[in-house]
Image (tube, rainbow, N blue to C red; front, side, top):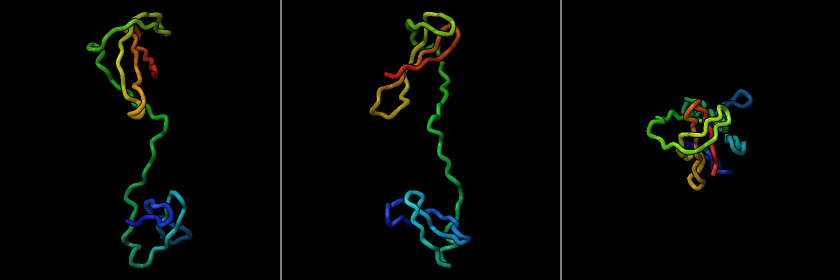
Length: 111
């Protein structure tokens, strides 16, 4: 494994102008491979980034959750189950999730 001399990121195998090189995906630095190194570097898996708006659906057993007063906009019910989840970084407050006891609609409240 080699690192970029400019920014310190990992150099990854790539093909530029028909020849195999090691390329820094951060700053664009390119290092040619000699004949001995060409067979040593292969791409096993392409890394895909998750979308930034990725939301994980959480299945919750509501029978154990406390019930609080909360007005549901969908059905007009005035009771909801409530729980908290850490959806952002650890130094941010938790997100409070409300689930209507009648229709099951979910609401989130950032504190």
